[in-house]
Structures are given as C-alpha cells and as structure tokens.
Amino acid sequence: MPQQKPQSLNGWVAFLGHSGIPVLKQTARDLASLRENPERLSARRVAEIIARDPMMTVKLLRYLQQHKHRKQEHEVMQIEQALLMLGVEAFFNKLAPEPLAEEMPRGNLEALIHLLHVVRRSHRASSYALDWAVRLRDLHFEEVRIAALLHDLAEMLMWCFAPDDMMKIRAMKQQDKSLRSHAAQEQVLGFPLAALQSALAREWNLPKLLLALMDSTRANEQRVRNVVLAVNLARHSANGWDDAALPGDYGGIGDLLHMKPEEVMVMLGADAGILCDLNKPH
Image 1: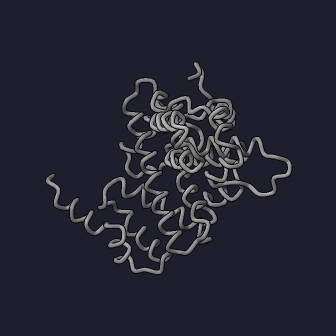
Image 2: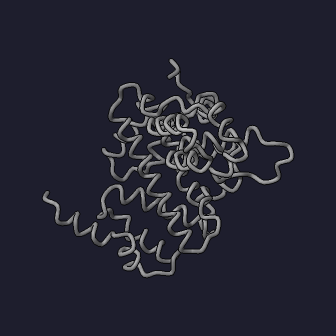
Image 3: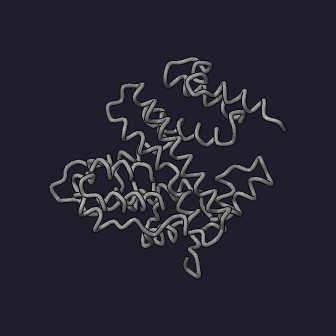
C-alpha cells in the first residue's frame, strides 16, 4: 500500500494500472501444481483454473489486449482461446500469479472475509448467467459467464487496496439501511465503484464486448439483462433467501426465460431455501 492513497477516480485508475492485479492463493497453488506435472499441462486445464478467479481472468485478458498482434482482427474474450493465442509457456513466463489477494488487506481479517465473499458472489453470478445463457441457446455462453464473473471486479480490487475505506462504506450502510451503495461509495471514495469499473475497463482496453455486457444501461439487450439479473440474484441471495429484493429478481428472470416467478423459484431451489430460512431458530 502506498503511504498516500489516491484521492480521485483518475488517481485510482492510474494507481491500479501500475499495481499488479492480485490473484487468489488457490489459483497460484493450482497453477504451480499443474506446471510441475507436464503430462497434465494443457491450455484447457490452465483455463479451468483461471476461470475460477475473476482477478486472474482479467489479468490475462488485459495482458492479451496490451500485446495484440497488429494482424489480429477479432478481440478475444474466452480464456482458453486467449491461452492458445498467447501460449501456455508464455503465460507462465509473463503472468506470474502474484501478488496474492489474501495478503493484500494487511492483517485486516474482516476485510479479507468480505473480499472472499465478493469473489464467491461473482462465482454464483457467473454460474447463474451461464445456466441461463445455455437455456436461451446462446452459442457464446462463455462470454456471458465471464461478464458476470468480472462485473464486481472494482469492488474486489478496492477490498485489496483500500480495505479501510471499504470497511467505512460497509459501516455506513449498516448504520443507515436506506443508504444506497453508490451514495456511500461517493461519500467515502469520491466516486461510485461502478464508475471505477468502467474507467478501468476502458483504460485497460478490455474487449468491447465485455464492456457492453457489463453495461447495465443496456439492460434492454437480452445478454446484458442476463448478466444484470445474475449479478443481482447473487447479491441479494447472499443476504438469505428471504431478502426483500428477491421477488423482483424472480419476476425479471421469469421474463428473461419465459417462466413464471414460481417456476424460477423452483429452478433455483429458492422455495426450499426460504423454508429453511423460516425454520431456522432465531
């Protein structure tokens, strides 16, 4: 951590651009283990490990975009394709899995727990988005999955690099339940995390399709709506299946998949989840 942290959106964009993107400790372990077993080493196996880590995923996509061949006509968004273009050996040589995200909050255990919660939430969102994309016969379902996985990247990075500020934002929201997240973020950071997310994506020249799929203002488009609904469901259900925002999520998902809200609840196992929550001793 720098002694004097950035004080503006542009300052944070510049700072994060010069800082190494953290990766999960489990990712580093799995990659090291795979590299020690040449007979198992392949682009597909490496991609499977990267796919579980939103920060490692963006680390790879960012590097590939920054080192595009002049003759490359199409942007690459799928992890295995990116690895095939870069080369597995080049990936290991150019993209070391460091620093470790778990070491970033510097002894702030509570901040680390919240960071890991956001990562877990991104996993759930990506699983929902993938499932729905397949149901909708989207042939490029992996693009939708990655967009949902990376949707809250800025939040993860700030838990790593600004844990104290993120704890302040959380405390403000706990004290005032009516306070919107973006309002609390603006009070503490001077900007909402959504603005940082967009600025980083542009600065790092991430694939235009990825930017479009993460743009909630385009939610009238089916694929973007899929991502937004998946992210919302993962966020709200993390509070418990009795969260007040979930009925609206079920309605939106039903519209997307041409299902009744009750059918959506059954599909998600939310009806059972609600019964379990209601039967918990208080």
